Image (cartoon, rainbow over all chains, first blue to last red; front, side, top):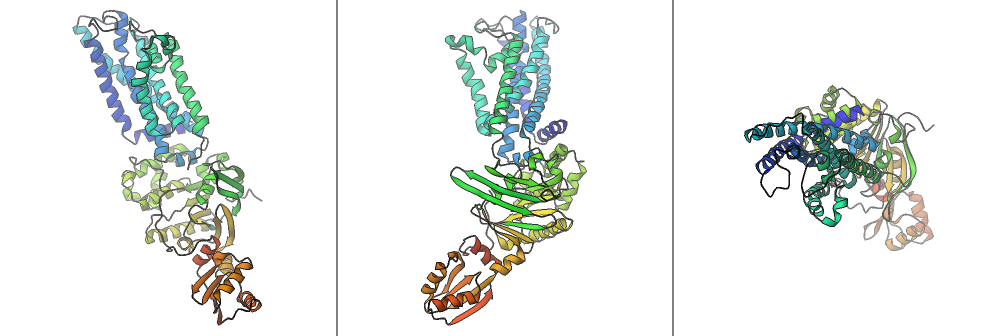
Length: 253
Length: 314
């Protein structure tokens, strides 16, 4: 398994996509952090004030946005095997295909930790001076901020598992990436605004990630952080298991 | 008997796609130290058979083993078997060298092994360029390099001459001969017999998913290379009589308004039949056709297609 994971890292780092999506994650994190701070205290903002621990946790949770791009990277990493027909040499070298999926889960989970650590650093670099300039002194070791930053790392890593899992289930690259983005940016935001579904929508992936990173919003309920983590990881594992047993074992022609 | 190292044994293999039977109750054996041509027209089921042999396609029935084990049960498959299935299977942005190093990492081979096989297939100069810029012939060479990484005892190559220029084909022949002479098993598929005729010792001919002939090239030549030419004012009657005896219609050809050519029968058999049917003969001669004709006859093709056709990449 160690060799398979090493080979997955080798595949990842011998094309450039990881770098572009990391730069995208950095830009996205800087943008979200700026928006969260610039509009954090405007009256129509549903988040708590920046001076409160909840408001600060929300600011420091923005790195989880990298999860979306990491899920795209992971999905492309898995579906690319089928798109470029490298599935043939890959499965010739490792006929037990579940091991290939497992190696990709480990790899993209670890890459997610790397992405998240970079994005946490970007968040801190943007937020600390800016909040300081607003006269808000943020102690990084309190107000629940360490838990939020740990939650960002966990959430981004788990989005890697979701990308691998969804890719394994769908196998088609365009369908996987478009499906992922449409779900996260269109479907879930709409569904979570339907009041009748409020008891259910807390279990959706985006809401579970928000729970994990302790986002606070006046008009939305979230699970406990640990519950969010379990729910989010559950999506990744269930998708990967379904993909492994339903579609990855299909004939490679 | 069946678990000789390097021997390929296919037994009762069957695969159906939708309602179409791609491979039907196929059994064959490929021995180490030989080059075996796996022949048949496009759609005969060659690729499906090879993919079942290599664990990529699950058969509906039957088994395929290499050195007595199914491919998926081999401890380190690339140590035992090298395969070229098509000139695809590369990420276009990854260099040839890095492509090979990925599979070195998977199998625990030293990275220097990648450089060795690159030199062996003559790709050293292009190894740092992305595969997206490779020609079809270069991709074939890289696919072959991938197959050779583990220094395997068994080589399974699906249409490896595809995209190679005549010089490349000559190079491939020399390389495969050398590998077979070292005692390795080499199984090479092709839909053009003339492409592998000078290369193979044994042939396995597939038609519509079924085995139609297995043996040495010499046997095929003896049995099917003979052609009997008949000139008669009543070619239609003789043709009908021949067809009535159960001779495959594809083996009988009109060679002109008053002549027929029959592949795979003795001159005496044709003459006797003409005598029985009271068909007047003006000429009865035995010649040799090339093996291509025999191949067409066995696989029910018309023989009208040129010997070297450009193939689509599947």
